[in-house]
Image 1 (cartoon, one colour):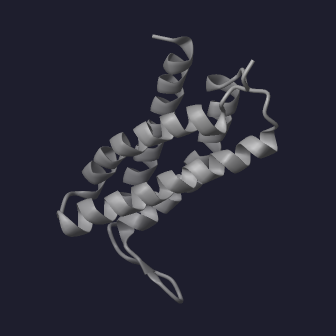
Image 2: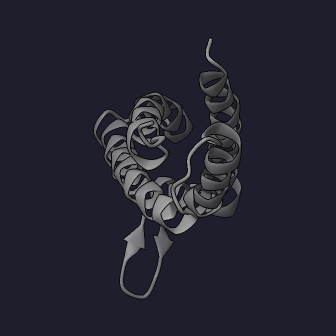
Length: 139
């Protein structure tokens, strides 16, 4: 296994585990499986939990990717952060869509839905980060 793939798996595994843990804790204990009612919108507990976990795992994932996984890049941090944000935005929408489908259409339990969703999102994220965000410049 190439070192970069190993690092991606280790860092991604950590960040993914953190994401699922934060989702579980948020869904079950912070939002207590109840809809979050804000002044202008109501957010279902599973989507609120996803958003809460996202706030933590977005910066964690960026720094792990930049400084541990894709170290050989010479692209400026600001440019990488912009590209990383675009990929994470794609991941964000994939998470949202899959969670909506799995929980609200299929009736699956939210934490199980989050875990299944993660498999799709991780594959998209790895190839996008490797070939877009942290792509090493051609020699």
